[in-house]
Length: 256
Image (cartoon, rainbow, N blue to C red):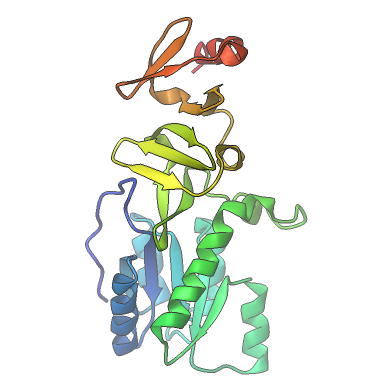
């Protein structure tokens, strides 16, 4: 078993990928590809037992799981636990499998299947597809069991930044600023300029934490420092408080 050293989770930290593969040469190649693609390898494990022990103390964003794992629990059984207990999206790795195994694997509803030997382009596409679905997880059919409905990862959003998507923890966001057809997310550590209107981003934010104070600004209520009749101070920046949002904002700030 080989485990990468755990690092602190910052606003611009790459998405963390957990690799569960009992062929170490393949695991090492996957790890190299992930690093080259800008992801962080949360850990590499050869068995389900080692993986579950790791997740008792640490976290990951996505799991790459070999279907044919050795041990008392194969990759399909592990994937079911990862999704049910840890709400962790799974991408399966496999060299080959029969119809019965494929039927079992489909029941887990993985985000993608990757065939071995693996190439970097297929890996990149599978991960981008997986990440693109994460913000929409709370829109899944209501007939699915509660663990799947709660899979929306309510403490974070994933946004396109350059050539990859990055994770932004909601608590690190200070405010959001509209810039024509773009919007800028201002966090404690850095800014992110997104090619989307602020209204579209606003729909992804939890309304109990974020409040529009002007047609050009949305603030994180947890980080408001000072308020007067016409302005809001947050993170050392003074933002205008529009009259049309004033009453609602002042009422909400009392209960935060």
